[in-house]
Image 1 (cartoon, helix red, strand yellow):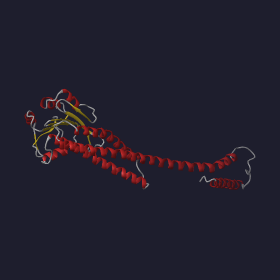
Image 2 (cartoon, helix red, strand yellow):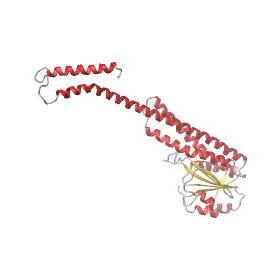
Image 3 (cartoon, one colour):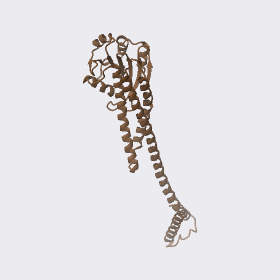
Image 4 (tube, helix red, strand yellow):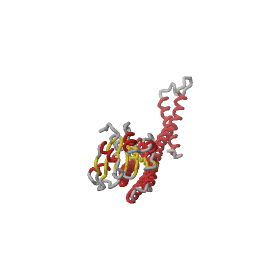
Length: 323
């Protein structure tokens, strides 16, 4: 359900894996205390997003501009009181293509985490569910590790789906079953987009893993592991791109071979009928002296001649191993 405000959800973590869902008033009161571990999740399509970032969170102009940039790529930027990270998540909304990635902007500071999105992101929803049932993050830095792990897990799910689909196309090609070129083109586009964004995102996670001092060691290890996992997925995307390219080249080669075979058969037929066309054209001219014009056996003789000429041409082509 669409909210009428930028605030999607706000939590105060209890340090045991759970958290309390806060109202706007409770969020304002809690944010004053720097010792409370708070997570604020916003939808930046709403105009009142500045109210939460400026008035409640008290962010400076520079990090706010970084968080609200229209077009972003995965990156990490450090500021005086925290760091801005921009990551991409898989779009699992109904009717959406997985490669239509969703941007997740993150502000991290001691005991504070602010996330912003334009469209619902399943990875964030999973993290919220874990907090709601009491089996989620223990701290804000741990929450950041959970978010990155959830994002990478969804990339892994899509990687396995694309690999399975590519394997089916390869099996169809080996079994001489018809392959729709559009399916292969869509698969290649997905791989190109995912590799384009997940490569830089892997580098971002590496930077986050070597992040500020308020990240505990367990968080850094977890984010580093997520970066390694994402690196393997990027390598898988590269390998699948190569396989898809080979498959497309094979399809193109088979198409050309079939076309060449058809053109070759047409050339054989043309060669056989070329002398016959010459004979019919020669005897069809409207002048006097055409042999057999007044003979009742002229047509039969002409048929015999064309049969002999046609047979001789086919024998000659066969002897020359043209067919």
